[in-house]
Image 1 (cartoon, rainbow, N blue to C red):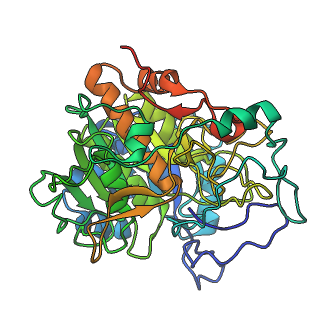
Image 2 (image 1 turned 180 degrees about the vertical axis):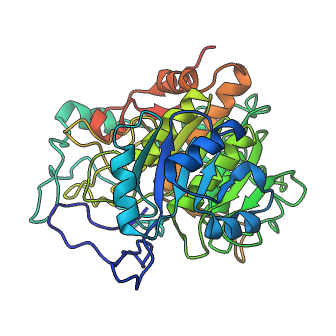
Length: 454
C-alpha cells in the first residue's frame, strides 16, 4: 500500500511517471484508456468493437500464452481485450480522436470509457511501524491536515473486555495466527484454488521446491520473487513447511496455488498489468483472488475499474480479497481504506495483533458510507515464508491479514465446493467473530472458524 496522504488539499508526491500526460504538439504519448464492454468479447464481437472504437488492430488475452507476447502486442495493438474481465485497454494518441470517441460512446449501452491506465502508482508498502494500541491510549484527536473518521475511542466496558483477551502464542503445531483464526488440522483447503497477485514467489524456497505451483509473470521473464512480499503472502495463504519442526502458519496448505507476478522488484505496478494477472487467474479457474496491493487517494469514491472487476468476479463465482492498507498512525491519524479494497464488491481486510487489538497502522472505514472494512485477520508479527538468508520471518501489515482471510475462504470451499462468489462472501461474513471494537475499525470482526458449524 502506498503512503500517499489522502487528505484533500494535501500535496500528492510524484507517481513515478506512470500517468503520461498528452500534449497537443505530440511531444508525449496520450495515456491508454480502460474501457468496459457490456457484452462478451468473442470473435463475433470483434467487428463491432473495431467499428465502435475506430481501430484496426485488436489483441486478446486468450490469443497469447506467454507474458512476453502479451506485453509485445499490447504495445502495438490499438485495443487490447481482457477476455475474462470484459474490459479493454484502448490506445488513442490523438486527443481530438479521443474527444470524438467519448461523444460517440456517451450514450452507448455496450461500451464506456472508465478512466486512464495507471492513474495511480500501485505498490506494496514496506513493513509498517506498529505501535499496538493499549487500553489506556487517549481518544484520537485530528491534527491539521489529517483525518479523523468519527469516534473511535473505546468505552470503559470495551476496554475492560479487551483487557481480558488472552493473547495467542506460537506453539510447536501452529502459529498464533492460525490459532486466532480457529483452524484445526482437519482443514487443508484441498480442492480450492487461490491466486496471489503480487511480486511473484521464491521458487528456490525449500517449502515450494516440490510443490506444483502454476505461475505466470506479467512484468518479466520469471516468476521469481526479488522483493519478498509475494512469497510472504503465498506462505500465509497456502504454504506448507517441509521442516517438521516448523509450526503450521498457512491457512490452507492443501489448496492449489496460482501466482501472478504483477509487480516489479521494487513492489510497484500499473493497472494494465494487474488486470492482466486477474484475467489470467480467472481463466485458470481460481475461486479466490488475493491482492495485498493498493494506493491511498484523495478521492474516497471506489475506483470504477476495480469495482466493475469485483462485481464481475463475484458474478463468475470468484471472491476478490484485498488488504485495507497500512497508512494510519492510530490513535491520532486514521486513513481511509486503500483502493481497490474500498470497492463495495471487494472484500477488505484489516489487521489485529495476537491479543486481538487493532494494529495502529491499519486503515479504517469512513463515516460517509464509502470504503468499509469488511473484517480483520492477524497481521502483526505474523510468521511466514521469506526470501533471503532465512527461509522464514515475521512480518506485519494488512498485506499479511488478507492472504490469511483468503486461506480461510479456501477452507470453506473445501467444506462446500458450491460455496462460491456471493455465497462465499456471505459465509465469510457469517464466521466472523465479533470483537469489542468499533465496526468502523474491524467490520464484522475476526475471521475465525472457532465456532463454525457447517
